[in-house]
Length: 140
Image (cartoon, rainbow, N blue to C red; front, side, top):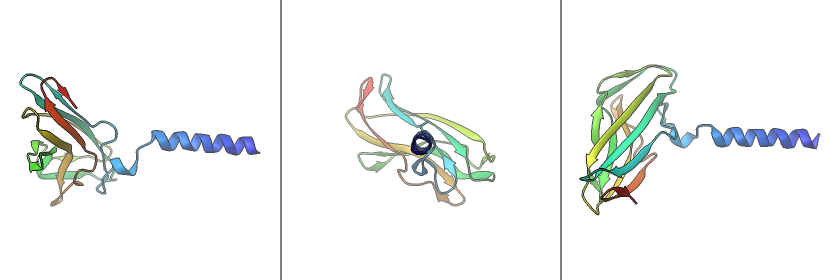
């Protein structure tokens, strides 16, 4: 019996480790999962950000006038970018792919995260975020 319980506990641990976490799903039922990436690239340097939103809310969601975008602070100063999907619906179970770039200032530190505007409010502030330092051709 001990072997069966050990196997069951091991299987549950693997499922929990590989499944989505509460941290990557907003209170609105929007999941970003592990799709979020932020990198420095190009000449002149720029921030390239990508993510995929999945609607797990159980109903269609409609993004607001500011739509889907990259939340961004450069050395603490607002510099959100890439606004798209303004006033657009996202069906239950549907996915939305986002990709945008922002020219960056050499040596500046940027904090970026997936963001959205929905039903008069914004998605969680810095819910899954990354910090990148602008250096020609790479991020730190």
